[in-house]
Length: 115
Image (cartoon, rainbow, N blue to C red; front, side, top):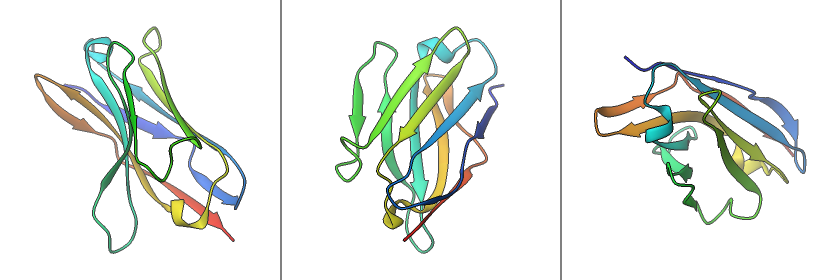
C-alpha cells in the first residue's frame, strides 16, 4: 500500500513562492510517474505538472516557466517549486503516484495566493 503525504502549502502574496513536497511510502516510487494536480472551488481537478521515472516532464500551459517539478528517488519525495504565484493559482494541490499497480493520491494541501 502506498501512502502520500504532502506538505508546504500556505498563504502567500502574489509574486511570491512556495515549495510543495510529497513523501511516498513503499518501494515503487522510482518506477512511477509522479504528478501534481490542483482543484479550485467549483472546478475539476486538473494536472499541473508530471514527471516520469526517466525524467520526462509536462506542465499545464498556465504554469510553464513558473513551476518546476522534481524528484529525489533516494528520499521517495517529489517537489513542486512554484514561483511568481498568481491569485488564480489558489487551489488545493494534490500529489499523485501513477504505477501499473494503481493510482495513489495524497490528502491535498491548500495554496492560497492573495492579490
